Amino acid sequence: MTVPGADLSVEIGALRLSNPILAASGTFGYGAEFSHLLDLNRLGGFVVKGLSLEPIAGAPAPRLCETPSGMLNAVGLQNVGVRAFVAEKLPALRAYRTAVIANVFGYTVEEYVGVIEILEDAEGLAAYELNISCPNTAHGGIQFGSDPLMVSQIVAATRKAARRPLWVKLSPNVTDIAAIARAAEQAGADALTVANTYQAMSVYVQTRKSRLGRVTGGLSGPAIKPITLRLVYEASRAVKIPVIGLGGIETAEDVLEYLIVGARAVQIGTANFSRPDACQRVLSGLEKACGKYKINNINNLVGSLQVDCP
Image (cartoon, rainbow, N blue to C red; front, side, top):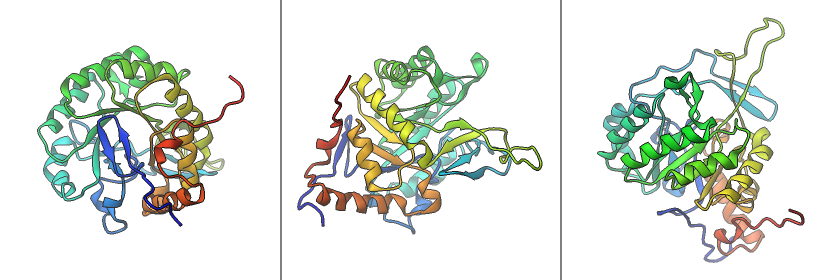
């Protein structure tokens, strides 16, 4: 049973979404690949695979391996490149009413700006999401997202180039997520996605080799949800801009937890691998949960955590 007239719409800065459920970048292809598996127009939006200036072949196989309550991936940001995306992928996405967000990455500030400049001339996108968990090759391979100064520089540069809303996807592999969040906000970010995957590894005892084609990969899935909930809580308390929660979401209850600690929307990632219609299933569950918990407006739940001590 749903609450009659229950309002699931949310606002992420200037962008209004029909509901808080989005598919996460890297788990949903370019979107159209999933169109025969679920109704894309039911989603609040989806974030396409990360786009770079030039095509990237990605990491050697194997790229995925299961872990207890999770998954490791080392895909290597494989993508067709921004120009091919605009010419070959984006036209089909314009047929959908849902918000299409372009995930953007590079290995220098100039590459990030270059990708956005190309996308600025294309129609059909609602916002950009910066993946700042990439190594800055101009500074010895240090991740952009690990240093507040670098975060400020990359966000400020892309902010100047972008007319559309600018979301920044933070890395969880930092000591102070609040400091990184504030740096992004002050440099012009419209929203934050918290968070990317956790650096991790898994090895075969018999061969003493990595289970992945690379030594390490990114850990995702239900195992990371309690950790990422904390990061969302800390980030949302540190900034005034919206925070989008991402990490281990498989059920409507997971979504509600993220909203309670401060997220205004969520992204579903790893669940798409095991159930390609996961986003729609979670959305249906969320509609039912509104009836169960007598929620008339989903926004009333945001940041409603009851804290008995500081």
